[in-house]
Amino acid sequence: MVDRARELAKERGYAVLAPIDAAYERGEITKAQWHDRVRAIIEPAYLAGTTAQAGSGHSGSAAEWDASRGIIVVAIDRSGTFLDVGCANGLLMSSVEQWSADRGLAVEPHGVEISSHFAEVARTRYPHWRDRIWTANADGWEPPMRFDMVRTGLDYVPRPDREAFVRHLVDRVVAPGGRLIIGKNNEDRDEPGIADTVRYWGWRGVREVRRPHAHPGVEASVVWLDQPVVEND
Image (tube, rainbow, N blue to C red; front, side):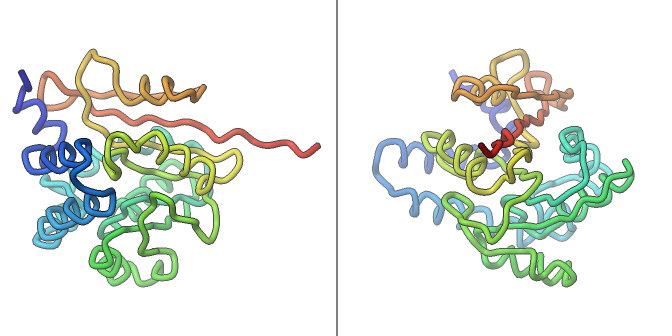
């Protein structure tokens, strides 16, 4: 039996998103329709947010945002370019820049967002980054440049397509020697999770950090892997 409370702790939109996933997996809708249906649910919820963090999908305070999303900086150990896949209103871009600066790193944020409405909100909030925020579906996107660090969530694509999504990002979006960061994730405690799944797909050197979550059966995680440097003959 599905533990509904735990599933909602992992994903607040579980109740409305699960039927869309099921319809895709049954072949009743296309991938484009999956994206359209998910966007139709997320857009109004985020756009109705009255705080910066609510406009980026977080229901807590600014301090709770830092405590929750700040786990991402564990995977940032260098200066360089940073791409936030699914950047929403741009708050995570700004936060990563500040969190990294607090650690003595100079990170240059960029963003890509499938929702034109979210992308325009981000450009309005951060006009100095207007030319760094693209409107596109990162699944299959060919960026104008590659990035030292790319952060994404796996839930941005249907479950059966996640392996291909990761391979596309590593092969086409992450710079040689760069890093793909997956998270922040809410995962089942003491059970195989995203890191194990990525290892199963064949990636080596996958690392993760987990932290306690308010729900006793859930942990917050961030997972990362590095793109090998290709040596010229």
